[in-house]
Length: 407
Image 1: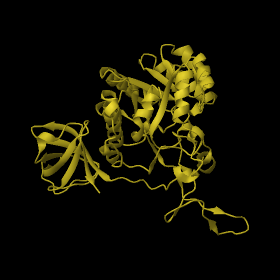
Image 2 (image 1 turned 90 degrees about the vertical axis):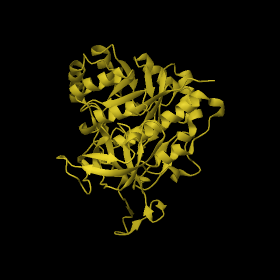
Image 3 (image 1 turned 90 degrees about the horizontal axis):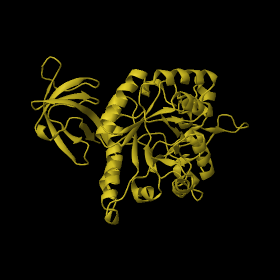
Image 4 (image 1 turned 30 degrees about the vertical axis):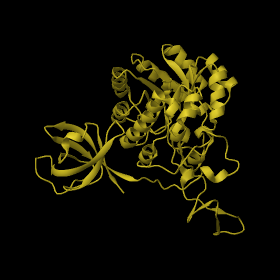
């Protein structure tokens, strides 16, 4: 018996990440509109790049949603109007919006485009979900603070599609609406410029005891103020599917291609396994091992099962990302047994690396020879270069594959 499963929605901070998301299992991708999307422009799409992204996504038979969910003042509304007109010929599938004026403007200029309500609006109940539907929205991205049971109720009673975050970084502020970065750095988190000030190493000092730092929260030999764990729901696929949500969202437009590929393929495998045989479904231990291989903070289920009243510190952690692997490089092309590799961290002939591809299976591979840009043999690679590499087992390595080294 097979069951219907939610859409797997994967972040794409640029065209390379978009292609990786499509190759590694996304049903849909979300991108940011330059200057309008709660992230820096380095991970947002200009008009030409967006047009190309839409073409690639639709050729793959998938969907693309564009975030225009900044905090919007009058100048931003004017910029949004310009963007909507400039992008009028691009057939995007939906926009992700957090501002009432922006909703009205989208309906006026692009009535052909569906409206998804951003998590920034903190929709956390069925009545609010029905209200935004009356405004013209077809989907709501729930507040990060919603539990699974609350999400299920909204999906049932809200009469609108529901999207739920299932993996990635969590913010200490309500649905990411925070002023700390603005106050301390003059960089607004609500305008895509967060400096992650909450994750700095803070100390509390009492006025009558200057210079005496008071611990806030101890974890080993570290003091933590506001650092939050990363969300990971890979162990709870059945609950996610049965909740009735239409889309499962991975956070991370600023993360690497490696992160996008690894997380997408793990959740793709898990969702497909459940869809194929829900009665005999079980968690594959390789899934969490793979998720541990990318840079992340310790995992938790966030607020999925309610507020952790019994242990309020359980979602706090240090600000030191961890991983079990180091990215070596990306396979960009293959010709006659030679692979062109974009190097991210150095390697040399004789090294044994691990490779992964869109399927969960992978394996070890040994570097036989490395050639530089002029065909010269190299004793080692340098980060941020491209080289030609011969492997002893070249037939096993796919284009779009990823090379890494276990720590």
